[in-house]
Length: 228
Image (tube, rainbow, N blue to C red):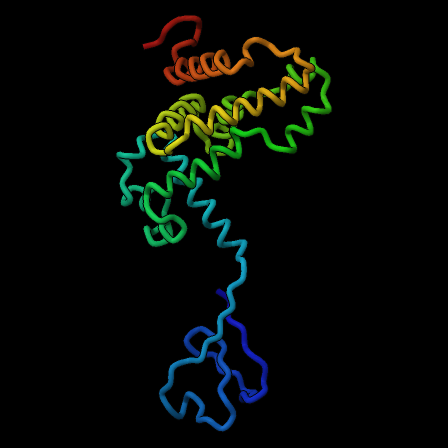
């Protein structure tokens, strides 16, 4: 919170800097040097962009850990150590470890999984052929995000891991996932005038993408053969 000095009416014009804040004292009263007194501090709550950035940065660091490991097995002590934040900072923004997981999904997973307004506008300006040449599925968008923005070498494995864990820790996750995909399919169907590839149907979409994610996560299709 920021500290504001009040107006000078009824206050000494000589502001005093003490205990890390600026203070003003009623005229006629002894100054702090003359007697022991508690500082008069006036606060005003205001939005802090830096605070929001701190919150997102903590979520991102925890998200990266969760995407590579098992949330149940990651202790709060490990979070503190690996993201260089105290538990006080972590739980200033999150009620508990479970709430932290939900916030990661809400603020980092879904905004990538769900097609943004800007991306919809861009795709709407494409021809059907251009659309199919440039469109990326929600799973592809997640893979790129985790690879490019979190430095994970195997984005597919990370996506698969996140989805599996969200099924366990986020109540109603499957329903929200299906709704997001259905909404995207409706948008694409309208955009292409019904000329939609079979792989974009919901069932095939899920089977193909989850199946490919699983295979990619095992890194088995290199050089056309199965690797141990």
